[in-house]
Amino acid sequence: MYTDHKVYLLQKMVGPLMIGVWVGALSAVFFYEADIFWPDTGVVFGMALVISFFGLLWNRASRLHPLYRRGNAAIGAVRLGIILGFAWCLWVLVHHADPTIQGFWFVLYALMAFAAIKVFGQVAGQLFGPRLQVDVFERGNLAAGVFLGAFVLATGMIFGGASWGDLEAGGLEYGWIFEVLPGYEDGWWITPWFFGMGWLILVVTLGLWIRREKTDFYRRVVRDRNMEDAKAAAYFMIACAITLTYAVHGDYRGFGDALIGFSVIALPVLGHEVMRPPAPLHTGNQAGDQTGDEGVPAVRSRDREGVVYILLALGGVVLAPLVSTLLGLRG
Image (tube, rainbow, N blue to C red):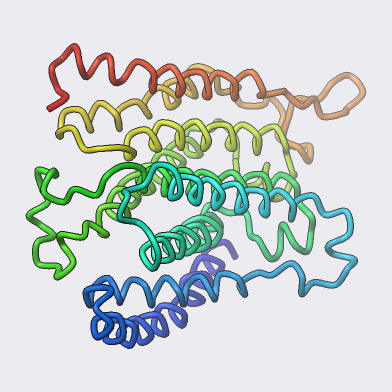
């Protein structure tokens, strides 16, 4: 069933992507003739517009029967992740993005941010197990909602970080790779490039975190609705997003400095290796936890573990530029 759900999600994305390519081709011609965007930038604008439109239609909670929506905090958790992630991106675009991002350029980056949050956050987050339609909307599984909401927020944080700073294409040591693009000098590709790197690292790191858990994470979150495991995963994702937002933000200062920035994510990973709870002694009960004398599942709090993740991430972000400066890596 889990594999079938992955196939369903991938199939669901094919149609919007094909329509996005078609609309992108039309917008490329339009914006090029209007002397606003280069053709490649126009294609990205059209695709982001289509994906954002479908993103608003995908998995709309408003179309559910009121019985599903009434008192369903899981829906609120996912919505909160979308709102906070997109608000962060807009704040960065207004206050800390390249000064050239005005007018149509602002709309372009806002559309790219929303499309990334909906596709790379809300849709791709379901590949880890929790399903939005079934677990969040229909079953009201708050643990699944917290997991997906945190993944969506982490995705938005990384895209906002990638939008931070000047778009100086010539400042990248490997910028020559993208010189084939007509809009190379505009530097529009810098934001999705750094976002892609940061988001892939988030996915790989979260996958490692789940594999290193000493329990069946999917069963405990999806079937048993274990909030402690869901919150621990949420804390970990936000901690990783903090480190990756730092790694992809601002002006490029050289490969060595970038490597130091990305390596900070190792701190919450090591924190999990130390803080993760042991495997339960009894797995026959529903929650998979140790049971007390009365047979009631004993739920271990993982809030302390989550606080450690956040503190390690913040500490690493503070120390990374100092270490990079001491090693002479800030070119």
